[in-house]
Image 1: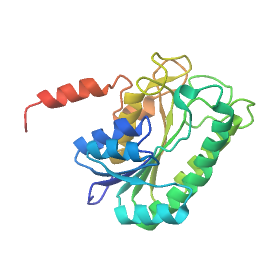
Image 2 (image 1 turned 30 degrees about the vertical axis):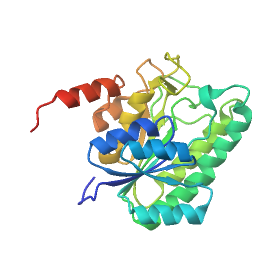
Image 3 (image 1 turned 120 degrees about the horizontal axis):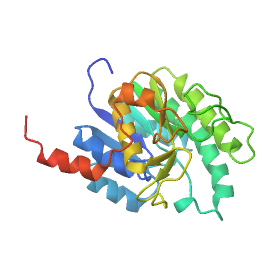
Length: 256
């Protein structure tokens, strides 16, 4: 990312399953991190990570605008979701409706706030498992399955998210995440159809904060469902990344 940076990043959804892993990585990289949550308990946990926590409802357009402008971030990271733990099937129908609204209206408010604050870049979370049926592995330019009876609502919501982010007057990177597994997701093992460990998801966002050309990137394990060549080449991303190993290597590396 060209130009001088203050190394300030605003993470919307910092208390979520990816945000909780991303924020310590950014702090370790030397970023000043402001992170949102809706919970006082999660705010305390974020503060312990070295994050400046803010409690805000992203549907409150004015409050969000004021908070982002006060933070003056170079980069805004959009990790907002509203899904039940372990994707509880008894709660998913209502959750998908809320999540779709978050991706449409919440994104609109966040983009407006980022523009007003003068952010240079936004990194936003999308989905890599809502492509329309076609030849695999799916490339980033493959169409989304907007009319699917199961995934159509989510596909239309992320299509709106992507359009809003990519058309805004800043550098925009959209990370299409595969099916998450790992700590905090409710899924211990990878599934078929493009799985993604939550640590590797966080690392993709970390890398996209600082590098990579604007555009869309598939972020998933290479099981033949989606192609991840672009993320490997442009972001230097590896689906095998795990935070524990990264921290061990960082702690044992000699000072420069």
